[in-house]
Image (cartoon, rainbow, N blue to C red; front, side):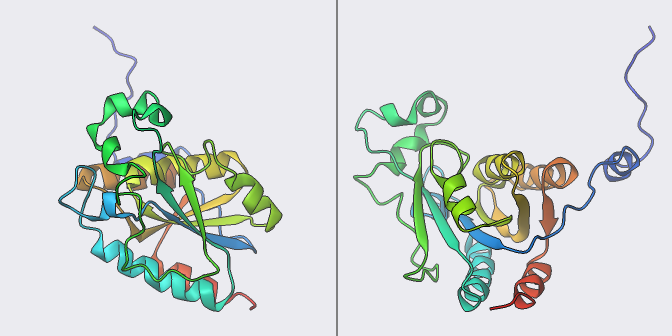
Length: 218
């Protein structure tokens, strides 16, 4: 029987390029650094939601040093649930048992101590994947006249992806630093970076981002 499905004889990257996907957005003039959920519940590989993110923490610290040097806004995010019955996790709590490891009564919501946090940095608590959903992130960025959001953290296929999509939808330039984001699944990580770069964000290297930050006026 005939099929309406196109026959693909080229790689996914070439196919998307031919269709006009993956055009670079480019960095803007006023960035902020958003560190997504590098908390114990996600950075301790022995926990339900955890993975070894040592490399990503190291890359994030390089960006933190550059951001602090240039007095660029830094926002850390953390998923924290305050209701003992996880009512504030909503339907999401039904999908993954690991939500209970992020209760306020535990330490899963606490930032990993390996991160070079500065007293000027902000901490934003959230309940769901996107750092924009149910938070005041938009107003924080607008008040600081931010136009570019440099994104690091975890997980690439979950909270990082949701945040990058929402950043684009809210008019901010999402720059996802490839060496500074991670996932429990390599395949999910790779596919998410491919898809984000094709449609919603620029996936940029750590060095490219550091060079950009170094070129900004203090």
